[in-house]
Structures are given as structure tokens and as C-alpha cells.
Length: 93
Length: 93
Image (cartoon, rainbow over all chains, first blue to last red; front, side, top):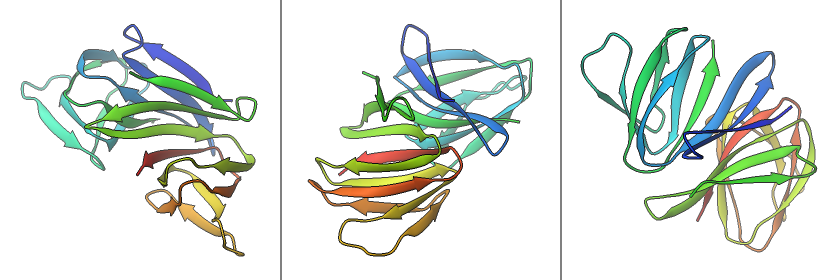
């Protein structure tokens, strides 16, 4: 079951799926600044492009390039700045 | 501009985008067998899961796992078998 989702007026679009019992999504973020809330903990992996991220409880922004990943606790939120349209994988942990 | 596409009765869904002048898409394939035609040459990278692929002019099927990629010539077609739902990145070359 593949589920298309759109967020932030279509500036972020994703396809959610289940694979081998894992829940995940791949998606794309257009340039902009976003705050994402998490329900479950998740691991974000940059697939193409770059995300500039401020994790919950952090003061500094950090840049993640293609192949890099970061984890976000459940029931929290994180901030993302996107300069070039960027593709990501989100694994729900 | 993020463009959602669906193929094969929704068994394959993708989000197309342009980043730094490159055209690309990320998508997900549900289990099944598919034949994809190419217009431009493209590079497919497995993001999560695995694709079993027969490239144009090849006799044998080859398995590509997460992180692996393969290139397909333009104006051709290739065959894919998917056992577990699999996410991919497609770069148009």
C-alpha cells in the first residue's frame, strides 16, 4: 500500500510504504523552512541534495548531505532549511 | 515544482523534482514485475529494499540492494522484479 502525502501546501510530497514490516517514506522538499513534528521516533536520510537541520534541544544548525542521516525522538519536532530541492528517506523506528 | 506520478495501477508511485538543474524522482515500487520504458538515459539507485533487474540487451537478471545503482540507456526499456516494497531514486542523465 503506497500512500502519497502532501505537506506545507505541496512544498513537501512523500510516498509512504511498508517494507519487510518497517514503515518508511521517501519524499521531496522544495526550498523553504519547515518544522516537522514526529509521532514515532524516526531516522531521516538525505537521498539527494542537502538538509540544514536543528534537532530538538539543539541550538546549532547542522548540514546533512546525500548519504548522511540523523535521528529524531518521537513526540518532538525539528526544524529544516532547504536551499535546493532535496529528496529524503524517512524510516519510522 | 514537485510532481506526483502513478504507474501500473498505483503499484509504483513517485515524486518528480528538479534540483540544481538536474531532473530526478524518488519513488516506491510495490511487489510485482514491471517493464519501464526510458526516454532520457537514467541512473536508478536503490534507496531501501532491492530490485532484481534485467537491463536492455542482457540475458541475466541482477539484484541491486540499497545503495547500489545501475544505468539504463535512453529510448530503451528494462525489466524489474520486486519482492519487497522498494524505494528508489531515478536521476535523468
